[in-house]
Image (tube, rainbow, N blue to C red; front, side, top):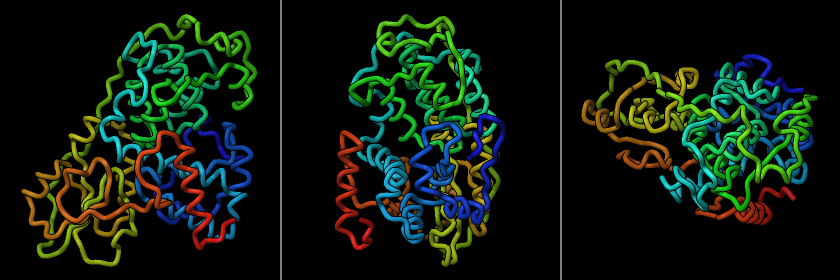
Length: 378
């Protein structure tokens, strides 16, 4: 069984070869069978996909190369496609994903988050263990993310934005599109109904045996439930990014400059050209989307996979004005629109682009593309 990171600090290796080993160990059949359980056979690849070290397309192609047939790996591929789907929504909608996308979240009684969630003292054993595990490891199982969002938004009646930023702050796989839009989905702002989970559901998937909690009710009770006492007090978390101090970097004049950042740390991107390689950490970005010390340390460790890389803390404008960069290259991303230079496409898993109001409309197009491709998966 995979380790539940709530049990302690289970580290994510940052050496590229160790990341490749994780991909090789994927078992799509076991994943499909057990992924919803807190100790299920999940891949733990999301931090590397979110940081752009590997792509969904790379993982998908590896599974194909291993000889997996699509029917047996469909659920795993579908979960990869969710990440591309959320990114496509971000590409299309831009800053609109920072607010209620389809419907106003209702009712909302505060714009903070429940103090008990922040402190990990909700009284729900699996939830509190998961919160403390998140603080230690930067990881939380996807099912627990949904449970937390439901408690904060639908029972605690906090607007999704603050607790979503709190979770993003601590996650090593921090992906604003996936995080914000998933929280909105749970809260009914990006879906047609709210998501709820009662104690029986939590017990089943987290292997607990709690009874007589504020969640130990029938599902029909949730819609008209008053805010449970443990969730009544709210807090506004202070989230600030501890960026490293800026040091003077050295730029080789006459050579191209490759711009890496929080969402692109791909060691194979243009690896065979002689170039300046700069990881750009813009304070304005991290002021809008703050992350923890653990997350910054993770980025800096992953950057060690890049040849002759240098770290620049400052704006793109300051980098360009302060150094003779030569020709600048960067990868497309919604947060890179102010960059100047040659934008290169990301490695999307499929050619399906644009906004789809539901994932399954998007997924239908993806499956059609696979069916008529030359990969012969079906």
